[in-house]
Amino acid sequence: MERANLININPIEAANRSQIKPKKIALIASPWIFDDQVEFRSQQLGLGYIGAYLEKFGHEIVAFVDPMVYGGFKIKTPLETKYRKTHRFGLPDSEIIKQIPKNVDLIGLNAPFTDSRLTAYPLIDAIKQAFPNVPLVIGGVLATTLPMQVLQETCVDIVVKGEGEIAFARIANGQPLEQIPGIAYRKPDGAIHIDPRRSEQLTSIDSIPPPGYHFRPMEEYASWSPRGDQSRRTLSLISSRGCPFTCEFCSIPEKGQRWRPFTPDRIIQEIDMCIEEFGVNHIEFEDDNFTLQEDRAVPILKHLAVLRKKGHKLESSFPNGVMVDRLSRDLAFLLREAGTDIIYLPVESGDTRILVSMDKPMADQHLDKTREIAKYCVEAGLFVSCFFIVAYPGGRVGKKDYLRPEYEKHLIREGDAIYMRGEDEESFQNTMNFCHELKRIGVNGITPLIATPYPGTELYEVCDKFNWLAFKDAKDVVTTVSYAHMKPEYVQIETPYCSRTRAFERWQEMTRVFEAYHNVRRFKGDMEHVPTKQVSRHEDLSA
Image 1: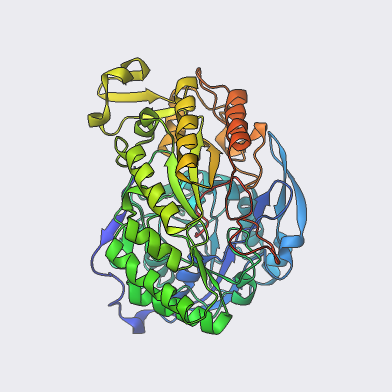
Image 2: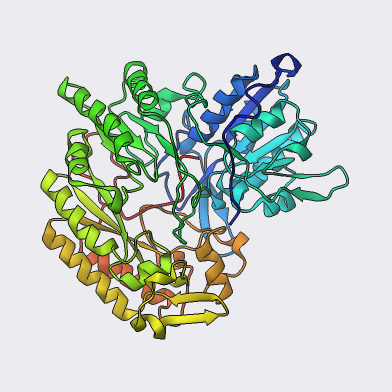
Protein backbone atom coordinates (compact mmCIF):
# COMPACT_ATOMS: atom_id res chain seq x y z
CA MET A 1 0.00 0.00 0.00
CA GLU A 2 1.23 3.49 -0.81
CA ARG A 3 1.76 5.62 2.26
CA ALA A 4 0.77 9.23 2.59
CA ASN A 5 3.49 11.84 2.74
CA LEU A 6 2.59 13.14 6.21
CA ILE A 7 4.14 16.48 7.12
CA ASN A 8 4.10 18.49 10.32
CA ILE A 9 4.87 21.90 8.81
CA ASN A 10 2.96 23.12 5.79
CA PRO A 11 5.61 23.61 3.08
CA ILE A 12 3.66 26.23 1.16
CA GLU A 13 2.04 28.29 3.91
CA ALA A 14 5.25 30.34 4.17
CA ALA A 15 5.54 30.78 0.41
CA ASN A 16 6.39 34.21 -0.90
CA ARG A 17 2.91 35.29 -1.94
CA SER A 18 4.33 38.09 -4.12
CA GLN A 19 5.86 35.44 -6.38
CA ILE A 20 2.56 33.60 -6.92
CA LYS A 21 0.62 34.58 -10.00
CA PRO A 22 -3.10 34.36 -9.09
CA LYS A 23 -5.03 32.03 -11.34
CA LYS A 24 -8.66 31.79 -12.38
CA ILE A 25 -9.73 28.27 -11.52
CA ALA A 26 -12.78 26.19 -12.45
CA LEU A 27 -13.79 23.23 -10.29
CA ILE A 28 -16.01 20.56 -11.82
CA ALA A 29 -17.82 17.53 -10.41
CA SER A 30 -18.32 14.43 -12.53
CA PRO A 31 -21.79 13.36 -13.68
CA TRP A 32 -23.19 10.33 -11.85
CA ILE A 33 -24.21 6.79 -12.70
CA PHE A 34 -27.32 5.05 -11.40
CA ASP A 35 -29.22 2.01 -12.59
CA ASP A 36 -32.56 3.70 -13.10
CA GLN A 37 -33.04 6.80 -10.95
CA VAL A 38 -31.01 9.28 -8.91
CA GLU A 39 -30.77 8.03 -5.35
CA PHE A 40 -28.70 10.84 -3.81
CA ARG A 41 -26.46 13.80 -4.56
CA SER A 42 -23.08 14.79 -3.14
CA GLN A 43 -22.36 18.13 -1.49
CA GLN A 44 -18.90 17.98 -3.09
CA LEU A 45 -16.89 18.49 0.06
CA GLY A 46 -13.66 17.54 -1.68
CA LEU A 47 -13.96 20.29 -4.27
CA GLY A 48 -15.10 22.67 -1.55
CA TYR A 49 -11.94 22.11 0.49
CA ILE A 50 -9.72 22.38 -2.60
CA GLY A 51 -11.26 25.67 -3.66
CA ALA A 52 -11.13 27.21 -0.19
CA TYR A 53 -7.47 26.24 0.18
CA LEU A 54 -6.57 27.70 -3.22
CA GLU A 55 -8.16 30.99 -2.25
CA LYS A 56 -5.64 31.31 0.58
CA PHE A 57 -2.96 31.90 -2.08
CA GLY A 58 -4.90 34.53 -3.98
CA HIS A 59 -6.42 32.23 -6.61
CA GLU A 60 -10.00 32.82 -7.68
CA ILE A 61 -12.70 30.19 -8.11
CA VAL A 62 -14.40 31.54 -11.22
CA ALA A 63 -16.68 28.50 -11.74
CA PHE A 64 -17.99 25.69 -9.57
CA VAL A 65 -19.84 23.28 -11.84
CA ASP A 66 -21.94 20.48 -10.40
CA PRO A 67 -23.91 18.79 -13.22
CA MET A 68 -26.45 17.41 -10.73
CA VAL A 69 -27.86 20.69 -9.36
CA TYR A 70 -30.45 23.13 -10.73
CA GLY A 71 -32.38 20.34 -12.42
CA GLY A 72 -29.36 18.54 -13.84
CA PHE A 73 -30.26 15.39 -11.88
CA LYS A 74 -33.38 15.05 -14.04
CA ILE A 75 -31.34 14.56 -17.23
CA LYS A 76 -31.08 10.82 -17.78
CA THR A 77 -28.97 9.39 -20.60
CA PRO A 78 -28.60 5.68 -21.48
CA LEU A 79 -25.11 4.37 -20.86
CA GLU A 80 -24.17 0.93 -22.13
CA THR A 81 -21.16 -0.92 -20.79
CA LYS A 82 -19.70 -4.26 -21.82
CA TYR A 83 -21.74 -6.18 -19.27
CA ARG A 84 -24.87 -4.15 -18.62
CA LYS A 85 -26.95 -1.15 -19.46
CA THR A 86 -27.15 1.69 -17.00
CA HIS A 87 -27.71 5.47 -17.03
CA ARG A 88 -25.71 8.67 -16.79
CA PHE A 89 -27.34 11.49 -14.82
CA GLY A 90 -26.46 15.16 -14.97
CA LEU A 91 -25.94 17.98 -17.44
CA PRO A 92 -24.46 16.90 -20.77
CA ASP A 93 -20.76 17.58 -21.31
CA SER A 94 -21.53 20.46 -23.67
CA GLU A 95 -23.56 22.26 -20.99
CA ILE A 96 -20.85 21.70 -18.39
CA ILE A 97 -18.26 23.24 -20.68
CA LYS A 98 -20.47 26.28 -21.29
CA GLN A 99 -20.17 27.12 -17.60
CA ILE A 100 -16.37 27.29 -17.75
CA PRO A 101 -15.17 30.88 -18.42
CA LYS A 102 -13.02 31.35 -21.51
CA ASN A 103 -10.29 33.06 -19.49
CA VAL A 104 -9.83 30.15 -17.06
CA ASP A 105 -6.21 29.30 -16.15
CA LEU A 106 -6.63 25.91 -14.48
CA ILE A 107 -9.40 23.30 -14.31
CA GLY A 108 -9.92 20.72 -11.57
CA LEU A 109 -12.20 17.68 -11.89
CA ASN A 110 -13.39 15.39 -9.10
CA ALA A 111 -14.03 11.70 -9.84
CA PRO A 112 -15.31 10.24 -6.53
CA PHE A 113 -15.72 6.59 -7.55
CA THR A 114 -13.93 4.08 -9.75
CA ASP A 115 -17.17 3.96 -11.77
CA SER A 116 -16.77 7.69 -12.42
CA ARG A 117 -14.49 6.79 -15.33
CA LEU A 118 -17.60 6.09 -17.43
CA THR A 119 -18.65 9.74 -17.19
CA ALA A 120 -15.35 11.44 -16.36
CA TYR A 121 -13.32 10.09 -19.29
CA PRO A 122 -15.61 11.51 -22.01
CA LEU A 123 -15.90 14.75 -20.06
CA ILE A 124 -12.11 15.07 -19.78
CA ASP A 125 -11.68 14.71 -23.53
CA ALA A 126 -14.48 17.22 -24.20
CA ILE A 127 -12.90 19.75 -21.82
CA LYS A 128 -9.48 19.35 -23.39
CA GLN A 129 -10.95 19.82 -26.84
CA ALA A 130 -12.59 23.06 -25.71
CA PHE A 131 -9.60 24.22 -23.63
CA PRO A 132 -6.54 22.54 -25.21
CA ASN A 133 -4.02 24.87 -23.56
CA VAL A 134 -5.50 24.90 -20.05
CA PRO A 135 -4.04 22.35 -17.60
CA LEU A 136 -6.65 19.85 -16.43
CA VAL A 137 -6.15 18.17 -13.04
CA ILE A 138 -8.17 15.20 -11.80
CA GLY A 139 -8.52 13.95 -8.22
CA GLY A 140 -10.73 11.68 -6.15
CA VAL A 141 -10.97 7.92 -5.64
CA LEU A 142 -10.61 7.14 -9.34
CA ALA A 143 -7.42 9.20 -9.65
CA THR A 144 -5.99 7.82 -6.42
CA THR A 145 -6.55 4.13 -7.16
CA LEU A 146 -6.09 4.03 -10.96
CA PRO A 147 -3.70 6.87 -11.94
CA MET A 148 -2.05 4.99 -14.79
CA GLN A 149 -5.38 4.02 -16.34
CA VAL A 150 -6.63 7.62 -16.15
CA LEU A 151 -3.56 8.89 -17.99
CA GLN A 152 -3.63 6.10 -20.56
CA GLU A 153 -7.35 6.36 -21.29
CA THR A 154 -7.71 10.16 -21.42
CA CYS A 155 -5.83 13.33 -22.33
CA VAL A 156 -5.87 14.65 -18.75
CA ASP A 157 -2.71 16.55 -17.82
CA ILE A 158 -2.20 15.82 -14.11
CA VAL A 159 -3.51 13.21 -11.64
CA VAL A 160 -3.48 13.87 -7.89
CA LYS A 161 -3.34 10.78 -5.67
CA GLY A 162 -4.82 11.18 -2.20
CA GLU A 163 -5.77 14.44 -0.51
CA GLY A 164 -5.59 17.29 -2.95
CA GLU A 165 -5.13 20.58 -1.10
CA ILE A 166 -1.33 20.82 -1.00
CA ALA A 167 -0.69 19.15 -4.37
CA PHE A 168 -3.29 21.27 -6.17
CA ALA A 169 -1.98 24.44 -4.52
CA ARG A 170 1.56 23.57 -5.59
CA ILE A 171 0.31 23.12 -9.15
CA ALA A 172 -1.65 26.38 -9.09
CA ASN A 173 1.25 28.25 -7.53
CA GLY A 174 3.43 27.29 -10.48
CA GLN A 175 5.81 24.81 -8.89
CA PRO A 176 7.52 22.44 -11.39
CA LEU A 177 5.59 19.19 -11.57
CA GLU A 178 8.66 17.04 -10.95
CA GLN A 179 8.98 18.66 -7.52
CA ILE A 180 5.42 17.87 -6.40
CA PRO A 181 4.95 14.67 -4.35
CA GLY A 182 2.03 12.36 -5.03
CA ILE A 183 1.06 13.33 -8.56
CA ALA A 184 1.16 11.62 -11.95
CA TYR A 185 1.49 13.40 -15.26
CA ARG A 186 2.48 13.08 -18.87
CA LYS A 187 5.93 14.45 -19.73
CA PRO A 188 6.53 16.54 -22.89
CA ASP A 189 7.88 13.43 -24.65
CA GLY A 190 4.68 11.54 -23.87
CA ALA A 191 6.14 9.36 -21.11
CA ILE A 192 4.02 8.96 -17.99
CA HIS A 193 5.59 9.80 -14.64
CA ILE A 194 3.95 8.53 -11.46
CA ASP A 195 5.35 9.63 -8.11
CA PRO A 196 5.26 6.53 -5.86
CA ARG A 197 3.86 8.40 -2.87
CA ARG A 198 0.44 9.77 -2.08
CA SER A 199 0.15 13.54 -2.03
CA GLU A 200 1.32 15.42 1.04
CA GLN A 201 -1.03 15.47 4.02
CA LEU A 202 -0.92 17.78 6.99
CA THR A 203 -0.74 16.11 10.38
CA SER A 204 -2.84 19.02 11.66
CA ILE A 205 -5.71 19.90 9.33
CA ASP A 206 -7.22 22.93 11.07
CA SER A 207 -5.22 25.22 8.76
CA ILE A 208 -7.45 24.01 5.89
CA PRO A 209 -10.40 26.45 5.61
CA PRO A 210 -14.03 25.25 5.71
CA PRO A 211 -15.18 23.79 2.39
CA GLY A 212 -16.15 26.84 0.34
CA TYR A 213 -19.68 27.58 1.53
CA HIS A 214 -19.63 30.84 -0.46
CA PHE A 215 -19.06 29.22 -3.87
CA ARG A 216 -20.86 25.88 -3.47
CA PRO A 217 -24.64 25.89 -4.19
CA MET A 218 -25.57 25.29 -0.57
CA GLU A 219 -29.29 25.99 -0.96
CA GLU A 220 -29.48 23.15 -3.47
CA TYR A 221 -27.22 20.89 -1.44
CA ALA A 222 -29.10 21.32 1.83
CA SER A 223 -32.31 20.12 0.18
CA TRP A 224 -30.96 16.67 -0.70
CA SER A 225 -28.38 14.88 1.43
CA PRO A 226 -25.60 12.59 0.15
CA ARG A 227 -27.66 9.66 1.44
CA GLY A 228 -30.81 10.69 -0.42
CA ASP A 229 -32.60 12.43 2.46
CA GLN A 230 -35.00 15.06 1.08
CA SER A 231 -37.14 15.28 4.21
CA ARG A 232 -34.72 17.51 6.16
CA ARG A 233 -32.22 20.29 5.41
CA THR A 234 -28.90 18.51 5.62
CA LEU A 235 -25.33 19.63 6.20
CA SER A 236 -22.82 17.05 4.98
CA LEU A 237 -19.78 17.42 7.22
CA ILE A 238 -16.43 15.76 7.89
CA SER A 239 -14.99 16.24 11.36
CA SER A 240 -11.91 14.07 10.78
CA ARG A 241 -9.85 12.56 7.99
CA GLY A 242 -8.07 9.30 7.46
CA CYS A 243 -8.38 5.88 9.03
CA PRO A 244 -5.69 4.03 10.98
CA PHE A 245 -7.14 0.61 10.19
CA THR A 246 -6.59 -1.64 7.19
CA CYS A 247 -9.81 -3.57 6.53
CA GLU A 248 -9.19 -5.30 3.20
CA PHE A 249 -12.60 -4.58 1.70
CA CYS A 250 -12.43 -0.82 2.27
CA SER A 251 -12.38 1.46 -0.76
CA ILE A 252 -11.33 4.56 1.19
CA PRO A 253 -7.95 5.60 -0.24
CA GLU A 254 -6.56 6.95 3.03
CA LYS A 255 -7.06 3.87 5.19
CA GLY A 256 -4.07 2.67 7.15
CA GLN A 257 -3.00 6.27 7.59
CA ARG A 258 -2.80 8.63 10.50
CA TRP A 259 -6.23 9.76 11.64
CA ARG A 260 -6.39 13.55 11.74
CA PRO A 261 -9.30 15.41 13.36
CA PHE A 262 -10.52 18.96 13.13
CA THR A 263 -10.81 20.49 16.59
CA PRO A 264 -14.26 20.40 18.22
CA ASP A 265 -14.41 24.22 18.24
CA ARG A 266 -13.84 24.31 14.49
CA ILE A 267 -16.65 21.82 13.84
CA ILE A 268 -19.04 23.51 16.28
CA GLN A 269 -18.51 26.88 14.58
CA GLU A 270 -19.16 25.31 11.19
CA ILE A 271 -22.38 23.71 12.39
CA ASP A 272 -23.63 26.92 14.01
CA MET A 273 -22.88 28.92 10.87
CA CYS A 274 -24.77 26.49 8.65
CA ILE A 275 -27.78 26.44 10.95
CA GLU A 276 -27.92 30.23 10.81
CA GLU A 277 -27.05 30.71 7.14
CA PHE A 278 -28.78 27.74 5.50
CA GLY A 279 -31.37 26.60 8.03
CA VAL A 280 -30.03 23.05 8.30
CA ASN A 281 -31.70 20.74 10.79
CA HIS A 282 -29.78 17.55 10.06
CA ILE A 283 -26.02 16.96 10.32
CA GLU A 284 -24.76 14.03 8.25
CA PHE A 285 -21.28 13.19 9.54
CA GLU A 286 -19.25 11.56 6.78
CA ASP A 287 -16.44 10.47 9.12
CA ASP A 288 -15.24 6.90 9.05
CA ASN A 289 -14.00 7.17 12.62
CA PHE A 290 -15.99 9.92 14.34
CA THR A 291 -15.57 8.37 17.80
CA LEU A 292 -11.93 7.28 17.46
CA GLN A 293 -11.09 9.71 20.27
CA GLU A 294 -14.00 9.93 22.69
CA ASP A 295 -12.77 13.15 24.31
CA ARG A 296 -12.97 14.88 20.90
CA ALA A 297 -16.37 13.48 19.94
CA VAL A 298 -18.02 14.37 23.25
CA PRO A 299 -17.89 18.22 22.93
CA ILE A 300 -19.41 18.06 19.44
CA LEU A 301 -22.23 15.77 20.52
CA LYS A 302 -22.86 17.81 23.69
CA HIS A 303 -23.18 20.95 21.57
CA LEU A 304 -25.80 19.27 19.39
CA ALA A 305 -27.62 18.11 22.51
CA VAL A 306 -27.63 21.64 23.94
CA LEU A 307 -29.02 23.03 20.68
CA ARG A 308 -31.83 20.48 20.81
CA LYS A 309 -32.62 21.41 24.41
CA LYS A 310 -32.88 25.04 23.29
CA GLY A 311 -35.58 24.04 20.83
CA HIS A 312 -33.67 23.44 17.61
CA LYS A 313 -35.26 20.54 15.72
CA LEU A 314 -31.84 19.14 14.97
CA GLU A 315 -30.98 15.55 14.10
CA SER A 316 -27.66 13.86 13.38
CA SER A 317 -26.61 10.73 11.56
CA PHE A 318 -23.46 8.70 10.99
CA PRO A 319 -24.24 6.71 7.83
CA ASN A 320 -20.77 5.14 7.52
CA GLY A 321 -21.20 3.49 10.90
CA VAL A 322 -19.60 4.04 14.30
CA MET A 323 -16.77 1.70 15.27
CA VAL A 324 -17.96 -0.87 17.77
CA ASP A 325 -14.77 -0.91 19.86
CA ARG A 326 -14.80 2.91 20.09
CA LEU A 327 -18.29 3.13 21.56
CA SER A 328 -19.25 3.18 25.22
CA ARG A 329 -22.44 3.34 27.22
CA ASP A 330 -21.97 7.06 27.87
CA LEU A 331 -21.42 7.74 24.16
CA ALA A 332 -24.51 5.76 23.21
CA PHE A 333 -26.67 7.89 25.49
CA LEU A 334 -24.98 11.08 24.27
CA LEU A 335 -25.60 10.12 20.65
CA ARG A 336 -29.28 9.81 21.47
CA GLU A 337 -29.29 13.23 23.18
CA ALA A 338 -27.59 14.66 20.07
CA GLY A 339 -30.55 13.57 17.94
CA THR A 340 -29.05 10.52 16.27
CA ASP A 341 -31.99 8.96 14.47
CA ILE A 342 -30.32 5.64 13.64
CA ILE A 343 -26.95 4.14 14.56
CA TYR A 344 -25.08 1.69 12.32
CA LEU A 345 -22.73 -0.84 13.86
CA PRO A 346 -20.22 -2.21 11.30
CA VAL A 347 -20.26 -5.83 12.42
CA GLU A 348 -19.45 -7.26 8.94
CA SER A 349 -19.66 -10.97 9.91
CA GLY A 350 -20.89 -13.17 12.73
CA ASP A 351 -17.96 -15.54 12.29
CA THR A 352 -14.60 -14.62 13.84
CA ARG A 353 -12.71 -16.51 11.14
CA ILE A 354 -14.20 -14.28 8.45
CA LEU A 355 -13.39 -11.17 10.49
CA VAL A 356 -9.76 -12.33 10.59
CA SER A 357 -9.78 -12.74 6.81
CA MET A 358 -11.06 -9.14 6.49
CA ASP A 359 -8.28 -7.80 8.74
CA LYS A 360 -11.01 -6.34 10.91
CA PRO A 361 -9.64 -4.45 13.95
CA MET A 362 -9.83 -6.47 17.18
CA ALA A 363 -11.22 -9.40 15.17
CA ASP A 364 -10.95 -11.91 18.02
CA GLN A 365 -12.88 -9.65 20.41
CA HIS A 366 -15.23 -8.06 17.91
CA LEU A 367 -18.34 -10.17 18.42
CA ASP A 368 -18.26 -9.98 22.21
CA LYS A 369 -17.79 -6.20 22.00
CA THR A 370 -20.68 -5.96 19.53
CA ARG A 371 -23.00 -7.72 21.99
CA GLU A 372 -22.00 -5.28 24.72
CA ILE A 373 -22.36 -2.14 22.59
CA ALA A 374 -25.64 -3.29 21.02
CA LYS A 375 -27.12 -3.57 24.51
CA TYR A 376 -25.95 -0.04 25.37
CA CYS A 377 -27.43 1.39 22.17
CA VAL A 378 -30.77 -0.32 22.73
CA GLU A 379 -30.77 0.82 26.36
CA ALA A 380 -30.12 4.39 25.19
CA GLY A 381 -33.17 4.25 22.93
CA LEU A 382 -31.23 4.40 19.65
CA PHE A 383 -32.63 2.84 16.51
CA VAL A 384 -29.93 0.27 15.68
CA SER A 385 -28.98 -1.47 12.44
CA CYS A 386 -25.87 -3.54 11.77
CA PHE A 387 -23.77 -3.76 8.61
CA PHE A 388 -22.88 -7.25 7.37
CA ILE A 389 -20.86 -8.22 4.29
CA VAL A 390 -22.31 -11.34 2.69
CA ALA A 391 -20.22 -13.89 0.76
CA TYR A 392 -16.86 -12.41 1.74
CA PRO A 393 -14.31 -14.43 -0.27
CA GLY A 394 -11.42 -14.28 2.20
CA GLY A 395 -8.12 -12.45 2.31
CA ARG A 396 -4.58 -12.24 3.50
CA VAL A 397 -4.16 -12.76 7.25
CA GLY A 398 -2.56 -9.60 8.57
CA LYS A 399 -2.37 -10.58 12.23
CA LYS A 400 -1.15 -14.13 12.70
CA ASP A 401 -1.87 -13.93 16.45
CA TYR A 402 -5.53 -14.41 15.54
CA LEU A 403 -4.96 -17.82 13.97
CA ARG A 404 -6.45 -20.84 15.70
CA PRO A 405 -5.88 -24.57 15.08
CA GLU A 406 -9.42 -24.98 13.77
CA TYR A 407 -8.68 -22.46 11.00
CA GLU A 408 -5.92 -24.60 9.47
CA LYS A 409 -8.19 -26.30 6.93
CA HIS A 410 -9.24 -22.88 5.65
CA LEU A 411 -5.72 -21.52 5.13
CA ILE A 412 -3.71 -21.08 1.94
CA ARG A 413 0.02 -20.74 2.67
CA GLU A 414 2.43 -19.20 0.17
CA GLY A 415 5.84 -18.69 1.71
CA ASP A 416 5.49 -16.19 4.52
CA ALA A 417 2.05 -15.15 3.30
CA ILE A 418 -1.06 -16.75 4.76
CA TYR A 419 -4.50 -16.40 3.18
CA MET A 420 -7.82 -17.34 4.73
CA ARG A 421 -10.65 -18.74 2.62
CA GLY A 422 -13.88 -16.85 3.09
CA GLU A 423 -17.52 -17.41 3.88
CA ASP A 424 -18.84 -20.93 3.35
CA GLU A 425 -22.19 -22.37 4.44
CA GLU A 426 -21.05 -22.95 8.02
CA SER A 427 -19.73 -19.40 8.49
CA PHE A 428 -22.83 -17.93 6.85
CA GLN A 429 -25.00 -19.84 9.30
CA ASN A 430 -22.86 -18.49 12.14
CA THR A 431 -23.61 -15.00 10.86
CA MET A 432 -27.34 -15.72 10.68
CA ASN A 433 -27.25 -17.05 14.25
CA PHE A 434 -25.45 -13.91 15.41
CA CYS A 435 -28.05 -11.73 13.68
CA HIS A 436 -30.80 -13.59 15.56
CA GLU A 437 -28.88 -12.97 18.78
CA LEU A 438 -28.65 -9.25 18.01
CA LYS A 439 -32.37 -9.18 17.29
CA ARG A 440 -33.06 -10.73 20.70
CA ILE A 441 -30.93 -7.99 22.27
CA GLY A 442 -33.20 -5.43 20.63
CA VAL A 443 -31.35 -4.44 17.47
CA ASN A 444 -33.91 -3.15 14.99
CA GLY A 445 -32.46 -4.26 11.69
CA ILE A 446 -29.66 -5.66 9.59
CA THR A 447 -28.04 -3.98 6.58
CA PRO A 448 -26.57 -6.79 4.43
CA LEU A 449 -24.18 -6.03 1.57
CA ILE A 450 -22.59 -8.41 -0.90
CA ALA A 451 -18.78 -8.28 -0.97
CA THR A 452 -17.60 -6.01 -3.80
CA PRO A 453 -13.98 -5.94 -5.05
CA TYR A 454 -13.34 -2.25 -5.63
CA PRO A 455 -10.18 -1.66 -7.69
CA GLY A 456 -7.31 -0.51 -5.51
CA THR A 457 -8.39 -2.52 -2.47
CA GLU A 458 -6.61 -5.52 -0.99
CA LEU A 459 -9.84 -7.44 -1.53
CA TYR A 460 -9.58 -6.82 -5.27
CA GLU A 461 -5.95 -7.93 -5.33
CA VAL A 462 -6.72 -11.16 -3.46
CA CYS A 463 -9.66 -11.96 -5.75
CA ASP A 464 -7.48 -11.33 -8.77
CA LYS A 465 -4.68 -13.50 -7.38
CA PHE A 466 -6.93 -16.51 -6.80
CA ASN A 467 -9.09 -16.03 -9.91
CA TRP A 468 -12.19 -15.17 -7.91
CA LEU A 469 -13.16 -12.18 -10.06
CA ALA A 470 -16.21 -12.97 -12.15
CA PHE A 471 -15.16 -10.26 -14.64
CA LYS A 472 -11.43 -9.99 -15.35
CA ASP A 473 -11.47 -6.75 -17.31
CA ALA A 474 -11.97 -4.39 -14.38
CA LYS A 475 -12.16 -1.23 -16.46
CA ASP A 476 -15.31 -2.53 -18.18
CA VAL A 477 -17.08 -3.45 -14.95
CA VAL A 478 -19.56 -1.16 -13.23
CA THR A 479 -18.97 -1.89 -9.55
CA THR A 480 -22.20 -0.25 -8.34
CA VAL A 481 -25.12 1.03 -10.36
CA SER A 482 -27.75 0.98 -7.64
CA TYR A 483 -27.29 1.67 -3.96
CA ALA A 484 -30.86 0.90 -2.99
CA HIS A 485 -31.55 -2.42 -4.74
CA MET A 486 -29.33 -5.44 -5.24
CA LYS A 487 -29.60 -7.61 -8.35
CA PRO A 488 -27.92 -10.97 -9.13
CA GLU A 489 -25.89 -9.50 -11.98
CA TYR A 490 -24.19 -7.07 -9.60
CA VAL A 491 -22.35 -9.90 -7.82
CA GLN A 492 -18.72 -9.85 -8.96
CA ILE A 493 -17.00 -12.58 -6.94
CA GLU A 494 -17.14 -16.33 -7.54
CA THR A 495 -15.30 -18.69 -5.19
CA PRO A 496 -15.22 -22.51 -4.90
CA TYR A 497 -17.23 -22.24 -1.69
CA CYS A 498 -19.72 -19.56 -2.75
CA SER A 499 -21.00 -19.04 -6.28
CA ARG A 500 -22.41 -15.74 -7.49
CA THR A 501 -25.87 -17.28 -7.39
CA ARG A 502 -25.40 -18.49 -3.84
CA ALA A 503 -24.05 -15.10 -2.76
CA PHE A 504 -27.24 -13.44 -3.94
CA GLU A 505 -29.32 -16.15 -2.26
CA ARG A 506 -27.56 -15.49 1.05
CA TRP A 507 -28.26 -11.77 0.70
CA GLN A 508 -31.90 -12.55 -0.08
CA GLU A 509 -32.17 -14.80 2.96
CA MET A 510 -30.87 -12.07 5.27
CA THR A 511 -33.27 -9.49 3.87
CA ARG A 512 -36.15 -11.96 4.12
CA VAL A 513 -35.47 -12.99 7.71
CA PHE A 514 -34.49 -9.58 9.13
CA GLU A 515 -35.64 -6.00 8.65
CA ALA A 516 -33.07 -4.24 6.46
CA TYR A 517 -32.39 -0.55 6.86
CA HIS A 518 -30.20 2.24 5.58
CA ASN A 519 -31.09 5.90 5.92
CA VAL A 520 -31.15 6.85 2.28
CA ARG A 521 -33.93 8.23 0.14
CA ARG A 522 -36.15 9.76 2.80
CA PHE A 523 -38.68 12.01 1.13
CA LYS A 524 -40.59 15.10 2.16
CA GLY A 525 -43.38 14.14 4.50
CA ASP A 526 -41.69 10.99 5.80
CA MET A 527 -42.32 10.42 9.49
CA GLU A 528 -39.54 11.48 11.81
CA HIS A 529 -37.33 8.75 13.28
CA VAL A 530 -38.65 6.14 10.86
CA PRO A 531 -35.75 5.20 8.55
CA THR A 532 -36.58 4.17 5.02
CA LYS A 533 -35.92 0.50 4.38
CA GLN A 534 -32.86 0.21 2.19
CA VAL A 535 -29.87 -2.04 1.85
CA SER A 536 -26.77 -0.18 0.83
CA ARG A 537 -23.37 1.12 1.75
CA HIS A 538 -20.93 2.47 -0.77
CA GLU A 539 -17.67 4.08 -1.70
CA ASP A 540 -16.78 7.34 0.08
CA LEU A 541 -19.26 10.08 -0.86
CA SER A 542 -17.35 12.87 0.78
CA ALA A 543 -14.87 13.19 -2.05
